[in-house]
Structures are given as structure tokens and as C-alpha cells.
Image 1 (cartoon, rainbow, N blue to C red):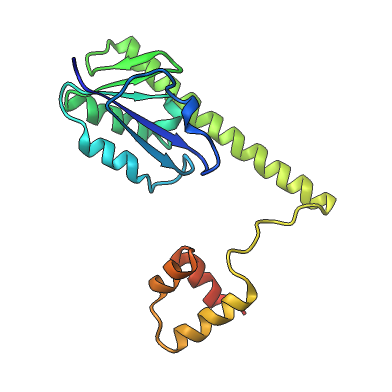
Image 2 (image 1 turned 90 degrees about the vertical axis):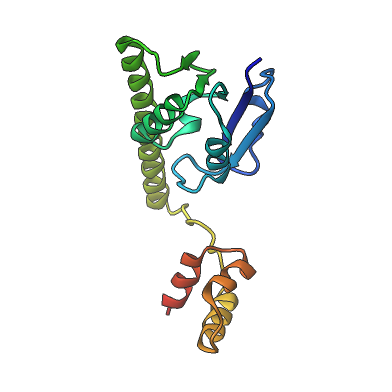
Length: 184
């Protein structure tokens, strides 16, 4: 029997990944908890490094695997070239690299639809935020650092503290530290 593996991506830590690929028996599951637009997907990278010729990668749906059509094609074609089969369960599509031109077109269309749907979601989100701002009910995202923490960051950097270490200590990104340093 050929080895079967799963890749699961959920958009946030509070989402339940168990509904994806329920009932599919696999030897190992790789789970990322991040947005689809996020380029940092360490478990996907681990899965891609782990997979070998003859393996099958199970994915709940096309939009769970890739950020956009180009990314999708690159990942699937790269796996197929290595002899790895990719199966998308929601769309009931399997890719081995031996697809007909019609199957390849279908794949590209499904990927384009997933990318288009993501664009529509972002547009609706922007429109909703604008409407909430006009009504005066949009507060925006809660700051990652309190004003006290921002002052502490500024003082410690002046004293020679490493910005990356500060970011790890405070549980924020380095960009957040740089933004805090730019704040008045």
C-alpha cells in the first residue's frame, strides 16, 4: 500500500481542523494554523520535504493548499514531477501529472475560482469596514503593544537591546517592534 499523508490548513488557532479530511486514513498529518495569504507555512514546507515518489498527499480543498493560482500550480506540478499524487477531497480531483489537457484546464479553472473567491471576500471585508467606519462603530484592530510596552521597547532599544529578542519576549513580530519605534 502506498503511503498517504494529509495537509490541513486552518485560518486561526480557534478553528477546528478535525472536519477537514474526516475519515481519511493517513500515516501523518501536517497542520498549519495561519491565513491562506500567509507565506509562512512551516508544516506545508515540512510536508513538501517529507513526501516521496509513490506517496499521496490528501488536501481538503484547493484553497487550503495555496495562496493563489501560481502557487497552486507550482506546488502540485512540483509534487507530480517527484511522483507524488495530490488529491483534493472537496473538489474530488486527483492529480498525478498524467492529466489530459482537459483535466489540466479544469485544475487551473478551479484554482482561479478559489483565488477569485478570496478576492471577493477581501473586497466585502473592506466594504464592511468602510461602512462600520461611517457609522462610527469600527474601532480597528487592538494594538499588539500597550503604550507602556511601547515606551519599554523604546527605552530598551536605546540601551542596546536586540529587536528580534524583544519581539520574541513580547510575543510580537519584529515589524511590530519597528512600528513601535516609529510611533511618536
